[in-house]
Amino acid sequence: MNKNFLCLDVGEKRVGVAFAHEIALLPRPLITLDTETAPTEIEKLLMQESVGTVVVGLPLNRNDQPTEQTNFTKAFVSKIKINDKIGVEYCDEALSSQRAKKELADRGSAYSKGDIDALAATYILTDYLREKGLTSA
Image 1: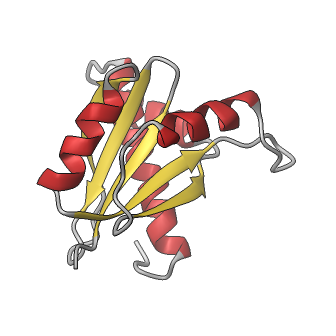
Image 2: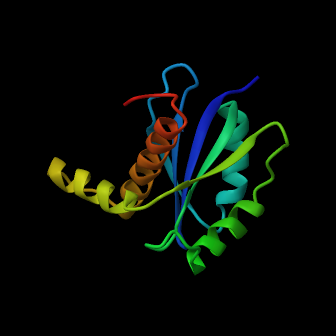
């Protein structure tokens, strides 16, 4: 049974993707995809990386209510062909992009918007694993 984790930070232009192996549970940025072609690429990643759970960053407003971006994210996920053996879970993505931008800026080297998106997905996956009690990191 596959237990690796793939995390998506869905945006209108790009999808940041992070990955964590079931044993190490150390999320890492994997790739940033163009939103239009991302569903097909994600389907390939699900097979290549033996994914058991897809974690999706869910944008909510400050009152934890859905937004237009929440609806966009859910509609995007519905376009991905995910077999019924793979779980899909949503996790609050609050401030993940801001945290990623700050970390990359603190490193002092050049970075792209895609780097921000993939690192934001890593933060979302880290938060998810911590919430589920799978890691304390």
